[in-house]
Figure 1 (cartoon, one colour):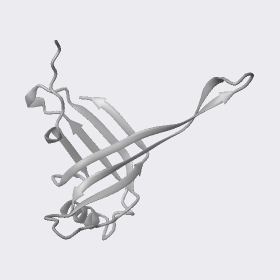
Figure 2 (figure 1 turned 90 degrees about the vertical axis):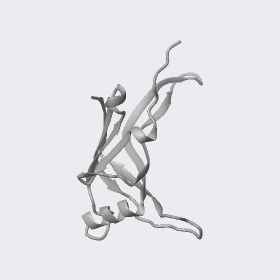
Figure 3 (figure 1 turned 90 degrees about the horizontal axis):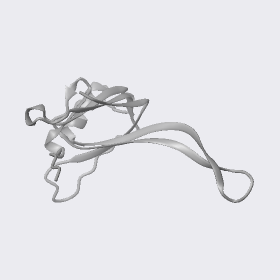
Figure 4 (figure 1 turned 120 degrees about the vertical axis):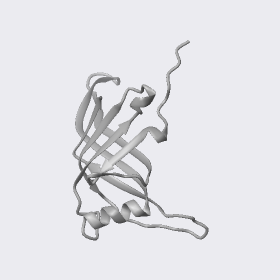
Length: 137
């Protein structure tokens, strides 16, 4: 039987805006490519045609991280263009370290929300970017 340690959230480090985001509560990102079936003779597809690639994601942060980003953007995050680095793994545990580099990231929304009973503010910041590079350290 093969047993391997899985990454846990404590093993993830998000760096953006030139600093480690200690108020990070979640990361999510996707690479997509447009694809379409090509039909010709008959009613079965003959090929899969490929189109544009796009990248999008979302950071879930505490309000303090949002305010730090807003200060960097002189009051708004919507005009910022950043690079981000997400590191998975803990070398002291013997993990293979995975590094994802997010290039040319721009936020598409800037929202706050809190409800009665909330003990802190958590914000979701969707973004798009120019490229996501995946690599092992």
